[in-house]
Image (cartoon, rainbow, N blue to C red):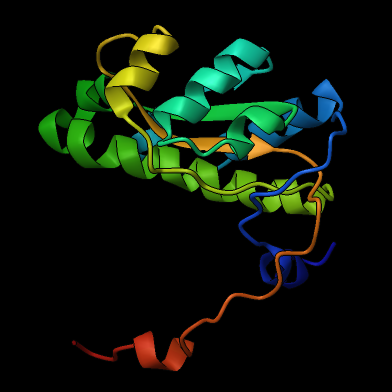
Length: 173
C-alpha cells in the first residue's frame, strides 16, 4: 500500500471480529515497530505480546474497563526502557528519550497494522502500576501503550481533524 494511503486509512478501532490473526503477522508488526528511530540507537523500547485470555481480561480491567482489549486475538504492550536510555543520557534519557523511542515504535506499528488489513487503537488510558504488576515488568521499564490488534468489525469512519495549516507556525509561535 502507498504510504500516504496507509496514513490516511489509519483509524482508532474499538470493535473487532472474532477472528484470529497469524502469529507471523504480529511478529512482523513488532519488527516494523523496532525499525523506528531511537535516541543514540539505544532502542529503549520493549514489546510484550499477549495472547492469553486471562491476561487480556486483566489488561482490559486495568484500562478502566475498556472491554474490547479482551476481545481481540492479540495485545502488544509497548514499554519504554528507561534504564537503557539513561545509561547514555541520564535523567533526560530516562524521562524523555525512552518515551519517545517507545512512541515512535507505536506509530510504526499502528501503520503496519493498517497495511496488513487489521485494526487497532493506541490505548494510553490504563493504570500503569496494575499493568506493570500483572505483566511482571521490571523496575526501570514502563508500559506506555496497549495495542489491541484484530480485524475491525466495522469501518469507524473518518474522525474530524483540524486543518494542518491551523496547527502550523512559521519562524516561531
